[in-house]
Each structure stands twice: as C-alpha cells, then as structure tokens.
Image (cartoon, rainbow, N blue to C red; front, side, top):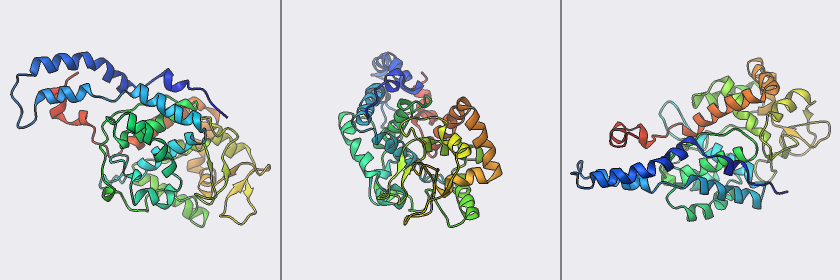
Length: 326
C-alpha cells in the first residue's frame, strides 16, 4: 500500500516559514555589522551567518515522506521514535526529553520500550546525510510531526534548536510507560505517574494516547500483536470510537495479556483499557470520540509540549533575542 505525499507538501510549520523570510533580513544584518566589534569572542556577524545556514524544513519533510512512501509501516514507527525520544522527560529536574537526540545511541536505543526503533533511526540516516545542518534531535521530532500530518492529522508547530548529545547523557531505562503493571489499579496509577512526571494532566494523557490510532504492536518487539484500528495509517479519533463502541475481551493466546475485538483482528493493551475503566479518563475518551476537531486541537497542544519539554531553544536566550530581534 502506497500513500501519496500531500500533507508534507501542503504546509510546513510557522517556525520554518519564519526562517525563510528571515534570510533577506539576515543577509542585510550580516553586512551591516561585519565591522562591529565582537562581544567577548562571539562575533555578531557569526550569528547572522549561522542564521543563513538554517535547515530547509520543507525539503526535509518531503524526504521523510519518501521514507514513508517506500514503506508505509515506517510512518507510525517514526511517530513512535519522536514520542519515545521525548517521553523520558522529568519535570522535577528538567532531565530527559527530546533535546540531545540520545535515542539514537547506546544504551538508550536498546531500552526495552524502544525495541524496533533502530529501524526508524536507520531509515532517517539518508535524510540526515542530505541535511547535515539539522541535528538528529530536531530531525526525529520533525519526522514524527511530518508523519502525523501526512497521515491526516493536524498541522503541528515545530521549532529548531535541539542540540545533539552523546549516549552518556541518556536517561535510565525506567521512564517510558509500560503496557501492563499486573492489575487495573496498578496500571492506571502507572500511566498517571509516567505522564504526571512530564507535567501532563489526565486530559493530556488521553489526547496523547489517541496516537494509537496509528500503527500496530509486533510480537518480536513488544510481545503484543495487532493494530488498534482498521486504519493504521490514518490519524483520526478512531481509537476512541473503537474503545467505546467495540466489545473487548481478553485474548486467549500464549502471549502477554491483551484485549481483542470480536473479529480477533484488533487489539487493545491493558494501558488502553484503563482510560475507559477510569471515570476521570473516560470522560475525555467520550469527548474525543464525538469531536475529532477537539481531539486534534488538544493533541496538538499536548504533542507540542511533549516534544519541547526540556528544550532550551536559542530564541529563549535574551542575549540572542537582542541580537536578532526579527
């Protein structure tokens, strides 16, 4: 199955567009300040020069779509790469998160929750080679955003500025959510603990889990098997509708505990089931099942927060804002 490139060509983020319009201003500023004294050892002209070398986000997104067109199964995997790259964030000490792009390195790529993501890292190497000016950390998030947009989801804001870091800066292998903690109560609490640690509330949690509209589980990666919906390459509110409208029973097999629909074709994890079993979660499932626009709106806000947690973007530094006020 092949899908045509549409959404990636349709739009790029506001941040990317601003970078394009800034090129003319950047050239003028570079000329104007070329003879200005340096601030310490940092030349103002160097700032202008750096701005001139911004990544071509539109072209990068087109090349990410080409990865997807060559192998549709890679689309949801790239979304998962962006998610897992970001989902290690800890609000208490501002550690983890997408900054650093450490998911590409040992030992993080071999963490249990990241099984199979080496394939996504490998698939993006050609894009990185073509665009060395973008960091791995930024590329992984941009690729995830591109896939959500390409598969019918909302247009997602994106900002450059995540530096790369060595694997030694990776967080411990205990920060991503588990599918099952052995009981409904323990799994429910675990889901909250993981997302609350990142600074999310119950509404954010349900909105982010809506990304399970995409993709499937693989026995050779997670041990679980099957897709959540009948349209695993379409970003929609179908996940919520399936949760509420389908009948879910425990699957009888030799694998880990999971749920199946009457056809045996679709599945839900214990961590999925808790958001309809817990009344505080369920009210948001019901909202999103009825209103896809609301889901897209809330998902956009939560996803942007997820992928920006812990990142110190250059424009947030007052020194650079004064030097480059455009």
